[in-house]
Length: 553
Image (cartoon, rainbow, N blue to C red; front, side, top):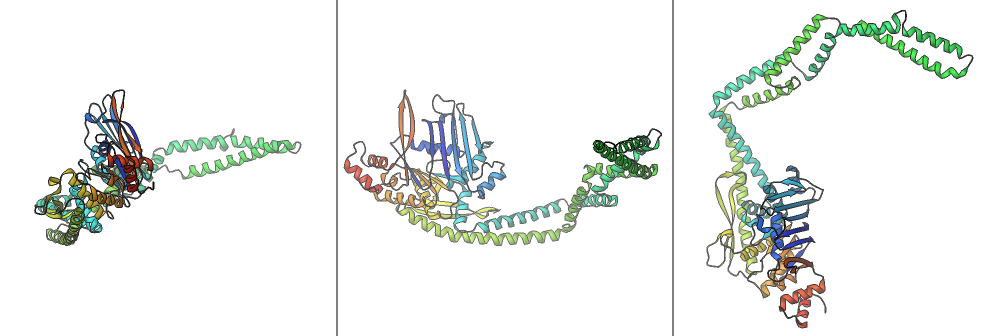
């Protein structure tokens, strides 16, 4: 849900910082005060169109930041991780900056992103219903997702997509084999030769390391022998050997220890040195005896290394990756060998298509059944919203060819009158009608709707009295399942809200700005009274406003 919104130098807004609550919030104020500007700012933060005209006069840039609370394991959190845009756990910050030149920049969790990424993020978080571009009912994918979610068919949708991929993969492989049988045969022959050559080489990554180490020893065997013998001469095998001299020194100190115990530590140190020198002499003699001066073995090792390097050069991989390359070649050969029979490929393709069509038809049946139910329920809900005689229909229009989404696309049709012919909702509904149809749909499908925050603008256009009360109650009920905001000029709607904000204009130093105030109960009474009575507010109007709000006077 939306937690915070910060707007700077946007249209007539100087600076506004708002903290949002759950439930239903009404935005009210005089006509032209800037109520819809906040909706426009939200639309901008969610990837809406931007130009230099949104920057407040005299400012360098406009900036809108919207912070949302999100579930750590939600689909949106997974989407963020997949886009490398994840931020703090449980939160997401969308930010949009528009320069006075018209240049626009977008950010998600502080990371620069494309406008398309910002739009995709916004589609997870918030829906604006009204005369705005960010409108889910106008997107085919959103209509389909809404119907499938209401049908409880999400698992079936995933299965259909998987079956479609299996079928198209089988079809692509069959077509590749048929169109390039000769090239496939050549590839298979080449793979067989390569795998046989690598198998004959008998290479392992461990061998590569061992051979290099052995070559190093064999190539420098004389140097190593000279070093070992020189050390032995210095330590024990020459007349001036260090080992003998240390032994004599240690013997004298041990003798002197009989007369002065303070030499004990020195005696122990010399004894340790003598023991270590003797151990070094022992190990050096053993190393000298084992050191291999074998030119024939060195030649064999170098030949083996040359063979490995030559094979790696042919395969265009480092020698240590030859084993991985051999496995990859074998896997590709197995694939070509197992699928070489065109008849077998055709059978696999046909079986995959049959499976896909069977699952897709199940999805079609679920969509038809739920579409009829949704049409009836939304049409019924519309009758209470000053849309008597209007009809809503869910139409399934077959694709020219099957897709991963199934066999048909979902269209929402609308007729404003009983005798009207239903046509696509996006083409025939006015802004107010579209908002009210959206409200009816959201109310009917609220238990399965995925977008947590809903914003309605002009939902009460052309209505009043009893219908306005119904709209207010519907919005309040919707606010129990979602975070709902509504721009309204009707007191009947505003009085149903859990929270109410007043948007007003300020004129300072010849500049007009918009400000937003969060209203407490007394202030709400005054605002509702203003909405009821206009310029002159009487005590009777205030009592009526208090009664609408359920506040005892």
